[in-house]
Image 1: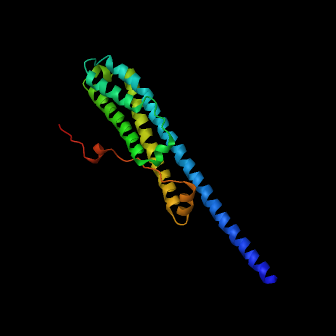
Image 2: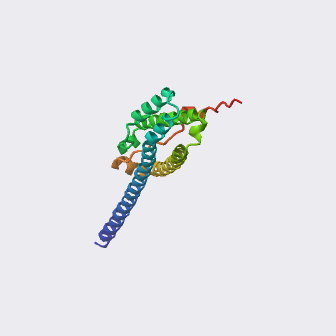
Image 3: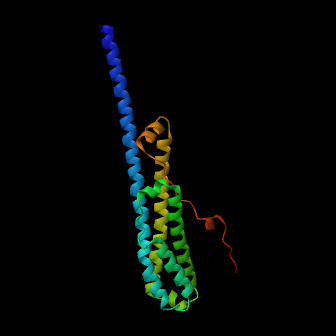
Length: 198
C-alpha cells in the first residue's frame, strides 16, 4: 500500500509538472502572439497616417504643377490599390503570400510618393510654399515612423517565431494552432544601388 501511494504521488507530481509546463508555454505563446498583433496594428496606424496625408499633399502640388498629371495618376492609383484604408485582417500575418501582396501595395504607394516629391524639385515656388513644406515634413516623419514600426514588428515576429519553433514548444504550438508570422522585407528596388548622375 505504501508503494502504491508513492507511485500515485509521483504520477501526480509528473502530471502537475507537465500541466504547468504546457500552461506556461501556451500562455507565453498567447502573450507573444498578442504582442505581434499589437505591433501590426501600430504599423497599420502609420500606414493610415500616410494614407490620410496623401490627398492634402497632392492637392497642394496640383496647384503648382497641374501638367504633371501622370504622377498624380500614379499616386491616385497606388492609393486606390491600397484601398484608402490600410486595416487588414490579422490572418494576413500567417499567410506569407498575402503578406507579400500587402507589402507590395504599400511599397508601390511609397514609390509613387517619392516620384511626386521628385517632381516638386522642378518648382521652386512650390518648394518655398509653407503648406507644402509642412506636408513634406509630415510625410517624411511618417515614412520614418513606418520604418521604425516595421523594424519593431520584425523584432517581435522573430521573438514569437523563435519561441514557437523551439522544442518541445513546437509540439504545443502545432497542437494549439500557433503559426509563424511573416516578416517585412525590403522591396526589390531597394536591392540595387541608386544611380546618381551629376
